[in-house]
Image: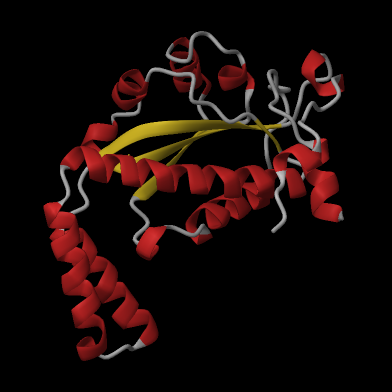
Length: 209
């Protein structure tokens, strides 16, 4: 039940203690959790931008409808999707599979060609939706890891993605911001920390067949 207790402990922190920074070990842990998250086909059409710069955080806060958790957080994790998932991207993934697992090309080739063909037929808008779904998988992983590690966090869709793209100069990396996750340690005067968690009854949300 330790993981359940951790999930009961977590909440969407609205104000962080700006004087308390996450130690390097916790940051490394979050990087690895991001990288180990499951994604469709294992393609990882995502990158993580970690911001620890108060000037930049101030700009991001203004692009987040002035939500102060962005500015008071120790770090702001910005989950981004790759703008381009094409033949070269997929072939690079299969090269990595081959390098790591030593899988013969004759085994990988049929799946690789099938995947390349599938993605070449998809409109860009559909690929973007698919990649965004992967970002939500990552967000779930990070939220759970934060809870277990007693790192406070606040998942956010409420920001202007185009402004984030400009502030972080994401275009030069071929990325688009889709989700933000300020992390750190809750402020003592964050009123939301003391509120009881509100959830529908378990019998209303789980169907057993």
